[in-house]
Image 1 (cartoon, helix red, strand yellow):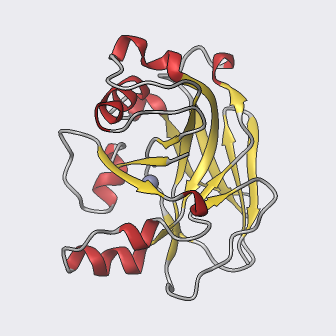
Image 2 (tube, helix red, strand yellow):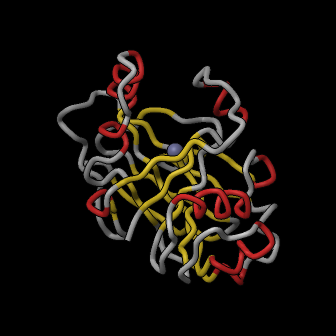
Length: 203
Ligand code: ZN
């Protein structure tokens, strides 16, 4: 099983980090050990003082495929949920400045939180889905898939040109604006439309 993440997929988030608008999806991987499943708390790691939340929609792949055309792509998604791409922003900034891979700042233990999965077929309008993140009951990020630069179809088609997709693979589809720090004691809850799918505590 692999965790594929798309970076820089929402224009306003690209602007807030002062990055360039990409002509192709930015792709990175997280190992399976990064997974934080429902019921687990996020342990604030010792190597960072600036862990950021990035709420994202996460797709679960339901069948094997490579070189998947746009028109077929949605058929490969079995489930959807909300997730958090935890990022050690201080470490990422340091690595970017040194022109090194940012792997360490994104792929550490617990950095890929996922919520409870719902069948993708429950959501017919995948190009118009609302999702959001609350911290201690206050909404800090709000996204809608209509604002994505690369749609679910494009993401699946693009990544499957390079990686064979297998059942159980997860794809984090990018974060909207509003990323920011978390601290010990915070309770994070993430929503897809009206469904609260993820709840975790920072410890
Ligand atoms: Zn992200």
